[in-house]
Length: 354
Image (cartoon, rainbow, N blue to C red):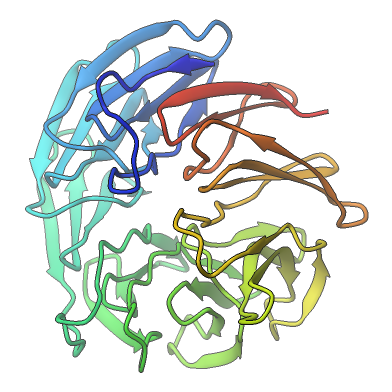
């Protein structure tokens, strides 16, 4: 393991390390809440270069054509040379960027937490278009940051917003439809990144503790299940969509299981044993990350205590791996069965999953 945080003491009031690492050809890229962005040898843990940004980094970066892209809490979006860390360009979005960007040809599309989408030339940072998505939500309700990453599917952009709306736009930034998925609840953030499988968009809502199947053409709700509790989003696996789901149980504490759903109807095709009992009175975070599927195992982080490992063949909990102050960023696969995670107190771990 290797520690990246320098001065920050961890407490309940400190930010978690949400910025997931990415892996490319033997190098890990990622940032920290102290604002530094690193390139690190996956083999040795040696820091190849580092760059100090002007704000906390909680956005997963993107590697594309020898360039790494990321945003930060000051709303600054950076493009750095992947081999040296040299700044190629930067762009001030005006508000926090907590989401991963997406590439559309020569353009890069960014969301900030002010419900603004930016399409920039990925080589120079020039503005192609900017779109503010107006919604009818009451911004006095409990809104935090909103960290859904944009998804491109069928020539359209889909994104969850910080006030509970799901929006669909054209690649030219024109709003096609929007849907309120947090109606009647206080905690409105639609933080999770959606997945589209079988022409159904699937997205969980943490505040509503619900997961939705949406018609991506119209925004109509096709199905809804009373389980959610995931801010990371959904992943596709074979013909299913998979995510950690929390079921509310006021008597025994909430139940957390890794579940796979049929995207056509939301019916479970597979689920794991209960991973832990989440006590309502506990004062630390418990949010699960997206799972990483690695052969016959599934691995994901728990922000309160470390890694959970599931046997995909029988759904049994294969083990927990306590890691310092817990994991809030999703694990990333390197070579073979090596995985890498960054803990909430800033350590990078290289772990072999057998």
